[in-house]
Length: 217
Ligand SMILES: [Ca+2]
Ligand SMILES: [Ca+2]
Image (cartoon, rainbow, N blue to C red; front, side, top):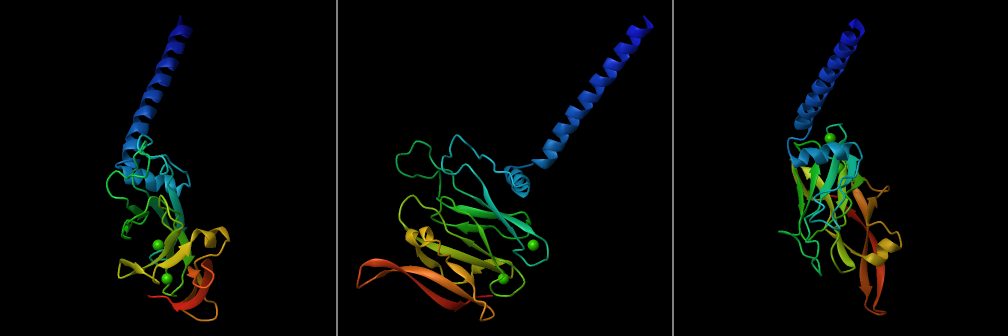
């Protein structure tokens, strides 16, 4: 009899511990996920790709992110791109609302970058191109059609995002050939070598040109 009472007591203790841990779990879930954005931050920081709103998204079901020190405070930030919601069964691309992408940062003091005419893309840490102590961020916005796309490079100055260089005209052929749009010009401080696509008037073919440009800071 004593043994049964002892076992029942053990069982009650186990149940109580379970209840407490489940409660704790929900409490901490609330703390960790107070809103959608925070969920993205958390998962992006942990390098986990997450599904967003699978009912509406088809091309936009993963969060792409990049790390770097984008505000130059010496701490690594995570940047990640939130694509617009797209209509699932629309024959041609259609967004729910504007076709804008947003790049969010784990450091909430860094402003969000809003990119119009964008349905996705991978943020790229371009390194500190202008030697101001912070990494620049590049993005090739995805679009439904067209091989011609501008490559954007942003730099943060006075807590505002600006173009570090003029948008770079690129053709998909350039990307297929593995020609990067921008890289630091190692021969000249604060300059970058940009590679851009254009149509050769004489042959009507695409060609990639390069030039060294000053990077805004
Ligand atoms: Ca930082
Ligand atoms: Ca910089």
